Length: 469
Image 1 (tube, helix red, strand yellow):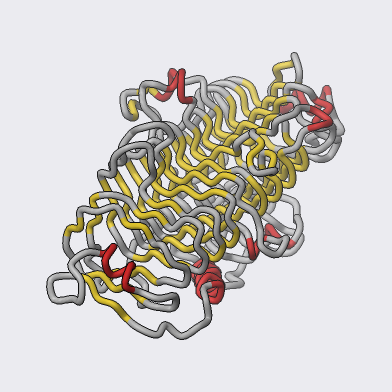
Image 2 (image 1 turned 180 degrees about the vertical axis):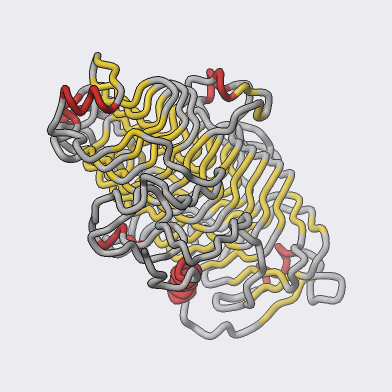
């Protein structure tokens, strides 16, 4: 019997640690003045207060409705709400070509023209948190939050909906050549943005603990909406995405729930070094925003023109086509272990070119599907037949009902064949989605470790509490 080795609150501790890092990334100067906006404040408009501010100041905004486009035209500015009741900006916020700025605690809506709700571009140490951003202009690639060519970008604890795209990052990169100085997107709720939930392009992304769902509508043949999309393009000298960690997210109801793509294929694949782990990824049955989900030939994960992709300890649920689709990637560069692949209407794992996966790199997975478990080139096989035909590839994988709770919290039930059936991986993956340490040499399959003495409480959606300034 497994024992509880860490407190369930570890995941919260990790997020607090990220928040501390974010705050440390902001300018360490003391904030010299606080300028107030509102009926009893020094200014009636946010823009007037920013124009009167100096670097290092705090602009504190009282609840109310402000119909204006706000240009944060200085660096080292904290633009914050004075209350847990968010001030409403009917318009947009732009903090481009500036550094060390914080935007905290606003509702931003109904902006017009070719623009975005909040723009944080061409700068460093830029944070947007605790905002609700919705009902954009619907023009072009109108996004809730947009950033280009910036470092140490932090997008935390926001809700975004009814925009063309939720979060759109172009040529994001790191200030110090590792993840701590890159783009961090965590704790957000993104839904009903019909093109994509999150688009990323550049280097060093951390995408964790987000709830991303229903970013889809009936225009799917033109938009191909994704939950998280890795953009295949060259912008500002950056090509596609390199160095990304996608973990602890719940993602559902898209054409592709996660989609990676480089600009070149096979051995020249240039979307690389991506780690996808501890995610709950699935589609629901029924109709979502006018789309009959079971008639959609969708996939949970599409890995295209990519290299060094690690897909570990995810729990993948219903999909109309494939749970995981591997398409023209670099040879022997795709790794798939400890995943639950459950309730798919067609293929479990589809590897178009088997050379993309080395012997031993795809194993310890648990399959339970309506049709076939593994499509291997032209072959379509149940797991047992695949193991007999290709004994070097998945000798330790299992075909059985995984016995999990309902999605989005598919905890392993007592007697699940996934218990103690995984393989120990690197330390990067040693915590499950709830923050429990995976037992040494005795890992479970899927996002959650099984702890019989633990009473599980299904998590709520990310909260949008205002942090103290």
